Image 1 (cartoon, each protein chain N blue to C red):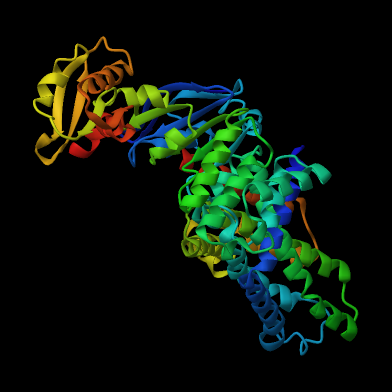
Image 2 (image 1 turned 45 degrees about the horizontal axis):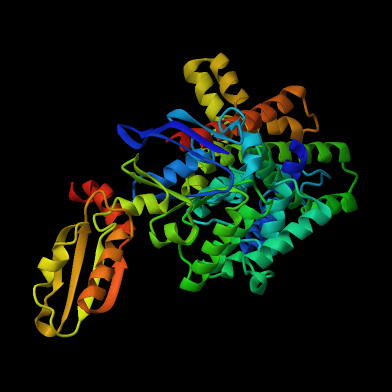
Length: 318
Length: 247
C-alpha cells in the first residue's frame, strides 16, 4: 500500500533523508524508529505529500503522492507530529469539518464522527472548545480525525507522544488492532512500542536505514540475544564455571555473582551452532544430574535498546 | 466531492472562526465607529447640503488600509502557528481550494462590515434624494478594493507565522498602492519624470480605481484592475505556500 523508493530530502547541503526505500503492505504495522533529528518527521511529511521530496517517489495504493496527490490523499489518514487542530472550534465541530472535507455526508458523517469519539475516548470533551483541552485530549482528537474515514493507510508521527501510560497502552492496542486490516506506519522513539504494536520496524539514523526487520529479528542482533542466564543456590557449588563451561553448547561462561555467598549466577554464551533453547535445556539437565537448586533459567531474546544504541551510536559520538 | 463543496466547507469554517473570536468583533466595532464618525466630524456630511455618501467613501481607502490587513493577517499565519497547515494540505483538497476559500471567508466578513454601515445610507435617504445607483457602485467599488487589499494580506500572511509581521507588511504594501494615486504623488512624478509615467503610477493605484467607482461608474478597467490584483496575489499566495514547504 505504501511504497517508498529512493526517497531523498536535502535542506541546503544537508541530507535530512537519504535514499530511503521500503514498503508497507496491508496487515502490517511498521514502526519507524530513530534518534531525534534522524529524519523521521521529514519522511512522514514526504509520505503524506506535505513536503515534496528532493528526489525519489512515494506511492500510496498505487497513486503517486506528487502526480496524483488527491487520489493518494483520499487513502490515508495522517497524524502530524504536533497533533494540530483548530483551537477556535469545538471538538465536535472540528471532527465534522474534517469529515466533510473527507467527503462524508449526512448519516455516514454522523456515524463516523460518533464512532471515533467513542474509539478515542473523547466523549467527555465533545462540546468543549479545542482551546480548553489538555495535551492528551488534543492528541487524541487529532488521532480521531486521522481514522475518521476508516482509511486503508495510516501515517502517524509519534502517536503516543504526550499521553499518560494508560492512554499509551490504549493507543498501542488500537494501532495493533487496526494493523490487521490496514497498512500502518508510525514513528516513535519509544522502543517498547515496537514490541507492543509493530509487526516490523525500521531504524533510521541521519536519514538512512540502519536496520530493518521484525522486532524478533532486530532483537536477535543484540549481543545478549540467545545467551542463557542461570541462577543457582544451595551448598556444594564448587567449580561451577568449569562444569558449566564443559557443556558442549556453551562457548563462554561469564560469572555475574560468585558462589561464595551461597548463590551464584552466570551468563552462558552459546556456540554458533546451538539452536535457540538447546543450551538452556542442557543446563537444566546438568543441574538435575548435579542436584543443584535452579532458581532461574532464562534464554535472553536480546534487547532492542541495545540494538538501537549500537546502530545509532555514531550519532551521539560525533 | 467537487471543488466548490470543499471551498464552501472551508469558507464556512473560516467565517465561523471570525465570529467566535473577540478580535473580529473589536475590529468590526472600531471600523463602524470610525467609518461613521469621520464623515460627520471631518467631512461635513451634514453641513454640505448634498445628499450623497462621498464624504463616507473618501475615508474608506485609508480606513480599509488598516482594517483589511487586521482581518486578513490570521489567514495563513494562524495555520503556520497552529501547525494545522500540515493537516489542511494533506487532506484530499487542493491548495488553491483552501486559498480561495479562506479569501472568500474574509471577503464576506468585510462585506458584512460594509453592510453594517447602512445607517449612513439611511440617513442621507432621510435627508434628501441621493442617487442610490451611485451609492451602490460606491459600495461595490469599496468591497472590490477591500478584496484587493485582502488578497495582498493573504500573500503576506502566507509568508510568516507571525501575525504582526503579516499585518505590517500588508499595510505597507496597501499603503504603497493607495499612495500611488494620492494626488501629490502622481503630481510629483509628472513634474520630475513626465506625465506618461505619472499616468502609469496612478493607474497602479487602488485609490484611482476606487475613485471612479465612487462617482457611480464601475468601468471594466477598474473591475479588471481589482480582479487582477486579487488573482495575482492569490496566485502568489499559492507559490509562497509551495516554496515554503519545498524547504
